[in-house]
Picture (cartoon, one colour):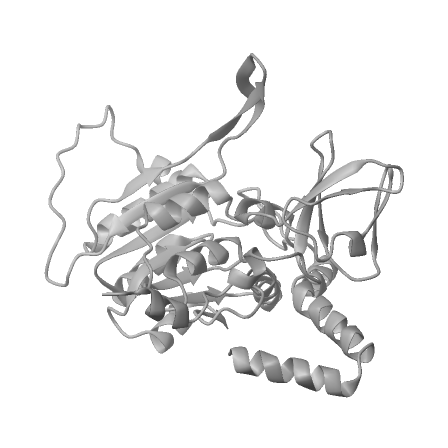
Length: 367
């Protein structure tokens, strides 16, 4: 069977245009100078990017290929590439702490997020994990995000559009509390994965279990050991999941220069803990695990000190941008669409109307 004809007529995956072809207005590009310094800019016709050693004309980059080298007004070479996922996440507008790429990679792989899956995500933050989940489920899947704060939802929406070049067909974002909104959005057993990135995920274990299909998975990202412990105990107490697994990851780069090959002095150490647990079909319970006895039984005071204190952003060291900065970040996110529209209007103004009509007609024939 010849599959080439069917693949040729299949719709292009969302984001393909953003990742391929010449550099266009609205594209984010990462400029690297001879010393390895990185700067990320949004290409805008007629604009300049100022460095400490002269400026670079955006027009010198527009229409160029991946890896094009341009020189500043003082002759300093800069190489331009579209940012990869990691580069995009670390340079995009962020109103809240993001899930680092190393953790997003584990969530999508060890969480077994597959093409076509229905994934629930609570809280969306600035959308870093959302991007990874959307790539994993593809256009045929669904990522249903829930976020309590409207400002964060707006920033995430702008980052999703910037990354994929358009609103993603698999994504929806609901502003509201997961416990209230999820049962109104999905029926029992309709979710394949539920990802919880929140201060008190143990409060949402039951609503996640109700939404998950048998064999589905709950994935939890938390910052501290006390949050991890309380979540694990809630998962066990529900009796609806297999034994949870917890882990963290650490990433260290290596210095590569001739024979000087050694570990880098810096590394990305602890960012958060991940917990994974499989949902059991209704009527099935987890098997009893044999455990070594603890050296001593914790007192009531110990248990109260561990489980009772309220978890707040301040208590675990998380920072949220002030309201004024959130509004500014909301304007920055989604800049691709605005830049593309402005460039298109400028291009139309420079060409006769009949030329523009011919261009649109040709485009529709290609479709």
